[in-house]
Amino acid sequence: MHLKDIDGEAALRLRGGELGLVEAVRHGLFRPLGDGDVPVADVVAVLARRGYYGWLVLEQDTALDGVPPPGGGPVDDVRRSIDFLRTTDGAGRAAAA
Image (tube, rainbow, N blue to C red):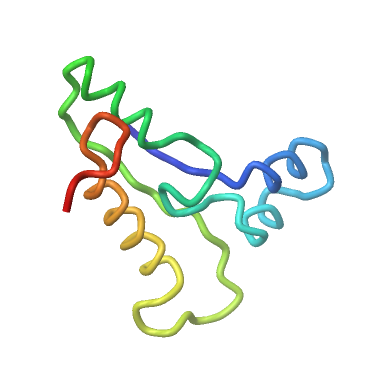
């Protein structure tokens, strides 16, 4: 399952022609999982309820204007997405610590 999260406002600007794709990506179209407007935890919960325990693919689309600091930029975004997935319990809720 390929998971993505998006910023709804940037998506609307893209769909409305105000931004091109690369420009929308630079404006934060694709967000780390759990940081955008897609109910990713709910999607993961539905998958779990239906017995899906296969691969979850994460791809963090970004447009870099320069070299990010070590551990920053898309590396940090991917880390945040993985942390988000680890904190869900498969039912769309934050797992107990």
